Image: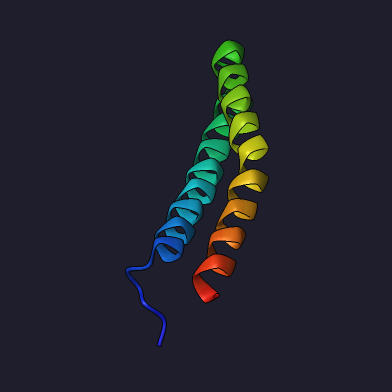
Length: 72
């Protein structure tokens, strides 16, 4: 049985939350763009989403490395 209090499990859940937040913020950015109310706000949101996307691969790789270490 997997230990649901392990560090790698915690990181998995944090990563899952990051993906969910990115999806939610993306929806808000699309909503702002469609309404045409504030292009600057939509641009700022897109910039923040780019940061989330850029870091996601590194975070996922680090989690995989931690899992490998925990399994050893």
